[in-house]
Length: 127
Image (cartoon, rainbow, N blue to C red; front, side):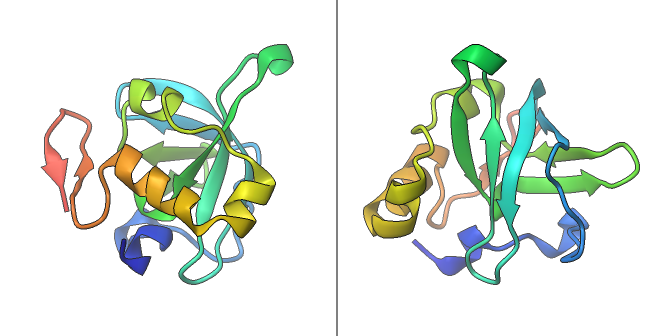
């Protein structure tokens, strides 16, 4: 899987100084959760999204390339994936993310990355 998956797309509007923690995450078909934490390291950027109810919370990891657009005024992050695709993602585990390179490959396969485009809001594909 190529490293561009773990980088924000230039058109996303991502600014390195922007703290996205707490931003609402909007999937291509509606609201899915909020940003619990994020990384903007070059080649290792991602969002950890809390998609569950507070007592039954589930966190998933979204590669930065999933971000279509960031609205700093409305505090929203728009991603190029459906709610079902995000909900069905492997659950985020801090240790696994940091120590298991296969976890990133698993995420790439789940989201259809590794040379394949992301699903757009209308179900169309974008590069």
